[in-house]
Structure formats: C-alpha cells, structure tokens
Length: 201
Image (cartoon, rainbow, N blue to C red; front, top):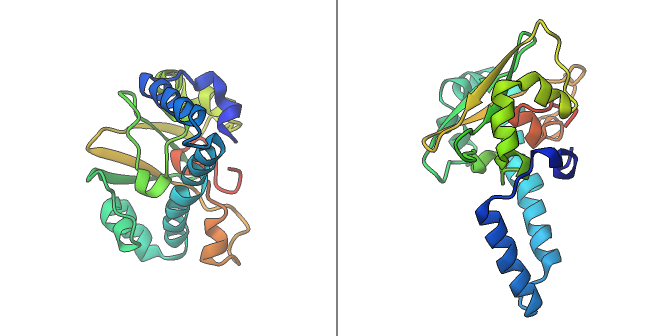
C-alpha cells in the first residue's frame, strides 16, 4: 500500500515542513526539479533500501544457518551481505510465525533501520501511528488491510536510537520452488515493519 493510503497517520513534522519549504524555494528559482526529488525519494523509500532487507529475508528463508545467525545477531548477519547500519545501532530481527506477529514502531521519534529498509515511510513517522500502534495494534493493522486471527499474539517492538528492529516475515505458502531472487520480490518494506505479510505487500 502507498503512503497515500495511510494519510490518517500523517502529521507533518517541523523538519518535513522546513524541507518542503527549501524544496519549493529551490524549485521556484529553477535550481531543482520537484519531479527529480520525488523520483529519488521514491527510489530510496520503495526500491533501493527495502530491496536490501528483502534480500536478507530471502536468504534467511532459504538458508537455515543464515536465519539462525540473523535472529541471534541481526547486525552481524546483515553485514555479511554488505548492509551495515550506518547509525551504529544494534539491529534485532524478530520472526513472524503462525502464532506470533511482530510490528515495529518508534514511539519517541522515527528510529528505523535505514540500511535494510530504506527511507521510513511518512506514516511510520507520524504521531498518530506511533501512538496508536502501541495501544491498539490490531486496529491499526486492520487499517493497513491486515486482519489477524484472535489466536495470533501481536507483539509491538519500540525502536530506540541505539536499538533498531526489523521483522522477518513468514515465508508465503507455495514458494518452495522459488529462487532467492524471486523470493526477495515477495518481500515488501511494509512486511519488514510488520504492517503487511510477505507476498501481500
């Protein structure tokens, strides 16, 4: 789903307002194309960054030893694939199963593992998402189109500046024949945050 679908979670921050003002001024003076900015943001938000995480997930789905290392020490495991955390934060990877569904938030600001998920989506940074997903995670997930059975435990993980989380989604059924590259295409940024399932993102 796009950020547009989750406008109810978006409250612009002061820095977003300032960045938009600078962008508008540069565009007005002909020094910057707003289309170019939008294209770059789109690429980093939805393609480049999240594809790093998707490759990590696909490797974990196909290599049990790598999965074990990923769940034991996320930072070291993603570094094996060349995706180190530029913020030197510890990365913890939590696994979704048929009994447990994990979702990530940063209640204080918008701490987020950029190296594997790209730019944080606008809704992730909003005060609305940050407050509501802690209090009523099932309702928020339902608004994202993810309705979970009552028997599934929902765990909410709160990121901090020195500790970031990433979800290892459940592998979709019927993907046993897929290559690692094909599996990576099944993994969305939203699935690695926990507001969607892999294959549905």
